[in-house]
Every structure is written in structure tokens, then in C-alpha cells.
Length: 101
Image 1: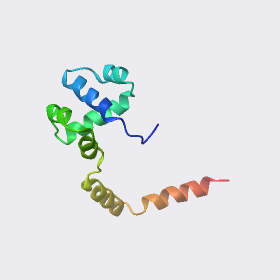
Image 2 (image 1 turned 135 degrees about the vertical axis):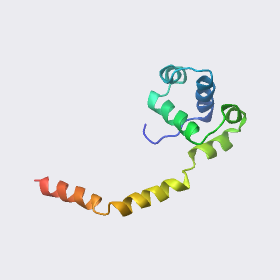
Image 3 (image 1 turned 120 degrees about the horizontal axis):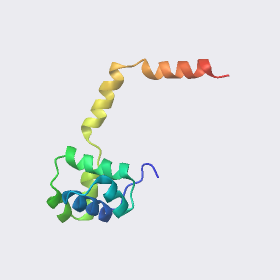
Image 4 (image 1 turned 120 degrees about the vertical axis):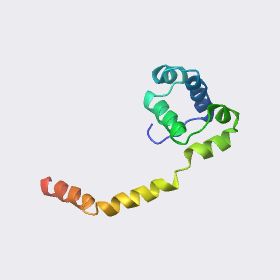
């Protein structure tokens, strides 16, 4: 299901397996998650520069807060992008409405 968060115990299993060099597909099968979900969390951990040992020692609540809070820079990046292309949403709507019956 899109947008649904995973249980932190599963995330810790992902971290543990990845730290042991297990491939994404094998991790996905082991913890019953999609490969893309595993990939998403592995990338998030790498981008934030988090240490797997520290993550495994964290309480579930703290781990969830660390990984699920959106980065403040994401909003800034979105605002910058929208400012660069103000016509884009209008262009899409124009194309959609002009092709509609």
C-alpha cells in the first residue's frame, strides 16, 4: 500500500541484513517487503549518513522520528522548483482540458 510506513522492527531487520551485505531482493523476501520499499529506506539511511550500529541501538520511537520526518530542505527544494517553472502546472492542465472530449 503506497504511503504506508513500515514497522520499526522490520526496518531494523533491513538495517541488520544490509550491514551484513545482503542484497536488496533477498532482504525484501526475508522481511516481506517490496524491493522498492527496502531500497527507499536503505537510500534514506545512506543519504542521512546514519550508522547501522547506532540505528539498531535506537528505540523504535526515536528511529521512526529520525527516518520519517521530512527534511526541511525538501520543502525549500519544492518551492525553488515551482518558482523556476510556474507555467508547468498550467501547461499540463491546458493540455488535459484541450484534449478532453
